[in-house]
Image (cartoon, rainbow, N blue to C red; front, side, top):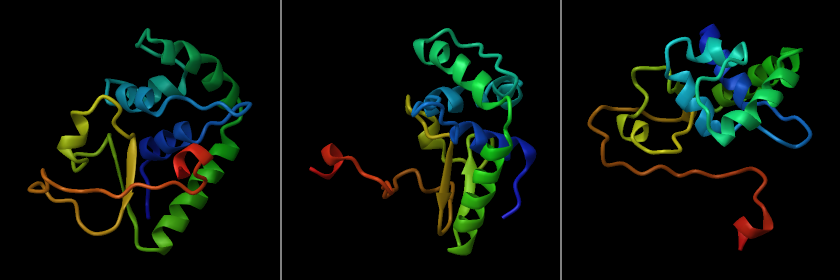
Length: 138
């Protein structure tokens, strides 16, 4: 699976973990859709003034001092997804599902198998996690 630089950076932003904390993915998705979106995030220039943005600033500064490990993680995840026939769509792409763009906490990206079609306005997605919490399992 080939990625554009902007997609690779978007995924890297989502991979940030500093002292167990991460950047809010909804913030990343919202900011990424703005002019200079991913570039702005990558250079730690947030236009949003929310609490999520205030929290994100230090995390971005810390993690992006050396983005190498983030980019390595992205490469490994993309390779793993590709090995099972998954494809990627991001909020940066025209074929990102329009109905997802309307929700407040839209995901910045989706790995999917099958097809994304314009007439899929009424569709179902199955979402899971690798490490569910005790609360999530209950």
